[in-house]
Image 1 (cartoon, rainbow, N blue to C red):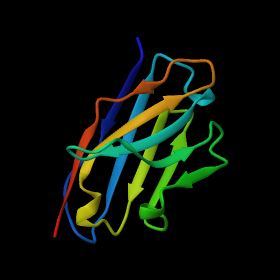
Image 2: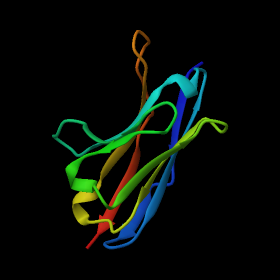
Image 3: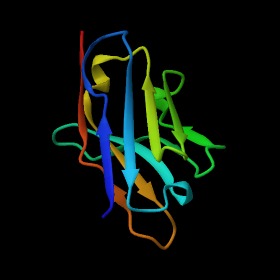
Amino acid sequence: QVQLVESGGGLVQSGGSLNLSCAASGFMFSNYIMSWYRQTPGSLRDLVAAITPSGGRTNYADAVKGRFTISRDNAKNTVYLQMNSVKPEDTAVYYCKGAQNGRPVYWGQGIQVTVSS
């Protein structure tokens, strides 16, 4: 059974930090591109950051470049999102996603991040 379980969300003050985790099971994690997306009510789910299977390459949405860092630990089947200098506009539900060509796409259930001003 495939599972992606996010943790580490919650309420944080503007300028603070949070570290999200996404623990994966039920699929070959080390073969998958892992990503973080976020969604606010009434909006589409937007890509925040992505990381290649080896962790050698990453990419970020312009809105989070220089503030957020995506990383992964293939031994622990976990992907992380370190969020620094957060802003109220970072408030959203954050989802992790696993994708590999020719394979089903997997999503976590989402976790709320709220940044107070």
